[in-house]
Length: 263
Ligand SMILES: [Fe+2]
Ligand SMILES: [Fe+2]
Figure 1 (cartoon, rainbow, N blue to C red):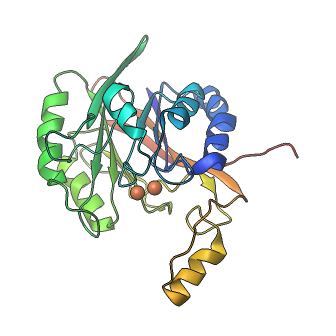
Figure 2 (cartoon, helix red, strand yellow; figure 1 turned 180 degrees about the vertical axis):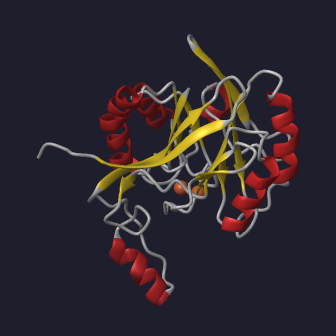
């Protein structure tokens, strides 16, 4: 089976890339399931039911999130009601929403999807390693194909978590840094890995935002308004081929697809 993962969708340009490219990518590669990180889909910060709906209607099956989860207050509606929306699993118990889901569609094997957040240079949630072990164990009862979006800053944390789960899940793809890494590989146990999938949105930018205010902030330490940039829109992510019989990854390919728009 084939699974397409789309890295952090940033603002309106990111949503435009999803609308313009996902149907084409689905068709070109015969994709069975599409998962996208939507944490920056609303004006670059957070997600709302409206931006989620735009992403779903472009052909995305499940949306994951990350540290920008709470930036839009309407997210509570998604957390409480949307079965296709997943937030980091390692929030303390009692927090609304779900940290994993088993996606089911006709003609496609069930796919377990887990979202986790790292703790190195990030907020101290519950231990993602411990949470991952028990959740993987639990989901294996209902799905052979398991996918993890590990939203984390540190490369070592992402590699270590994937090494720990090698052979237990089909793929771990990193998100959050918005910079696509070139280390796509399949570990010996059959788990595909990419340290960071990049981001979907305007790449003539500093990780999706207008360049000048970010430089000014670094130069002066004064607060700046970071608008979402506009130029050179790319859809980034990874395309996975998975043996649905045993859940092992067969192939991983980085995606960085330009959006060609009519003027
Ligand atoms: Fe993030
Ligand atoms: Fe992000």
